[in-house]
Image (cartoon, rainbow, N blue to C red; front, side):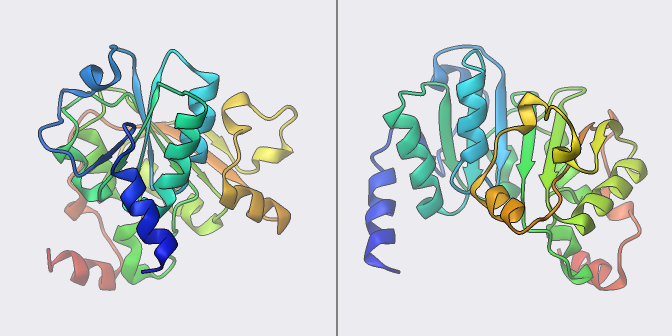
Length: 235
C-alpha cells in the first residue's frame, strides 16, 4: 500500500465523522447525529460526492456514505469537516453487513450512484440492485422506503428494471436520459466524479426510483443465470 494511502487511513481514524466497523450502532444513529432527522445512505459512495451534494441541499436531513475503501472516504469526510457539514457521516464497512449497523426502519432512503455494474452474468448477484441486496435493504428501510439508482450502464439499468418488476417493487420514476430533461430535477443535478467522466465521454445517464414490497424478498427463489445459481448455492 502506498504511503499516501497509509496516511489517509491513519487520518480517517481521527475524523469524528468517520466510523470504521463500529460496534453496537443499530438504533443509535439519532444519538450520533444529535437529532431525529431522517437518515439517507449512499452505498458504495466512493468520495462521497452525492452524500455531500445532498447534505448541502437538505440541512434538515442526515446523510451517510458507506464504502469499504477508506482512501476514498477520506476525501468526502475531509470536505465535510472543512465545510462544517454536521449532517454528514461516513461508515467504512461492507455493504453486505448493513444489518450489523442499522436497526429496522432506521434508514429512510438509499442512493446507489454509479456502482460497478458487474456485467458478467456469473457476477450478477454482486450488483447492488440484485434481489439479494434488495432483501437486505428491506431490513433497514421502513415500509415504502425509497431506493434510487443513478447509472451510466444500460445493462444495469435494464437489469434493475427487470428486478423491480419481478420482485414486486413499485416503480416511482424511470428516466432513460437524465440530461435530456429540461430542467434536470434538483436531486439529479448532483454529479459524482465518475458521472463527470461519463458525461465527458458522451455516455447517457439513467435513473430509477422505486420502493420495495412489504413481503420479504426471497432472493434465492428468483430464476438466475445458471452460473449465478451455482454461485448462490455456495453460500
